[in-house]
Length: 259
Image 1: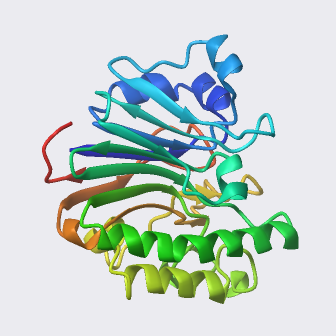
Image 2: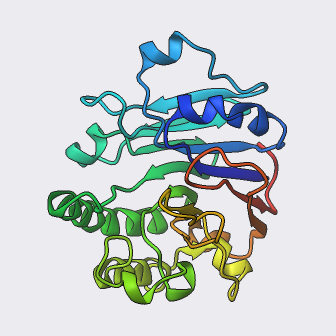
């Protein structure tokens, strides 16, 4: 089974750069997208389809052109979960879950705190809510693959200039400690790091300067699984042959039946 995760930085913008045509050729079972930035009437006015897939969306409820997540799936799931029960987080359209039997695939877009202290405080609130929520998912016995933009680089290997970013959102001590607990105490599996423990490979680059050309990036996009899927991922790569966004697609293949 293949899953692709990508923060689009706008579905319309990425579509103009060819992302939908590229996705149609990748033989993915599920495609998890973040930061779609479109509402239903806007999507109805243009073609955002991917051949062979049906798109499902959780939009921001109050702010146009903001946030939003999607799942493009080969077949309709047994059940959807849209949101996690945290009102402010859910209004921003940041969690969409598709259940297939005992397997759940999630598109998650964690808030960024880089725009100011209010947004960083909101990010910390979401992280505090998510920690016990994710622990309950592990305890449920279901198999989860949570794909998306976590807006956190976990370790120094996960960003080029880690020394100068220790006081910046995305690499704050509190954020890294949260990731430590997630993949340590709670047992979630960072599939990319499981397969490539010593590889410095990034998924996001600032649009400033020549960050992309010089590979001065951050690894903030993940596919994280419950402990009962440890060892299921057998390949992971970041696709950089084309650029559709300030993020790059993360492609993970799992030793699981195709959907």
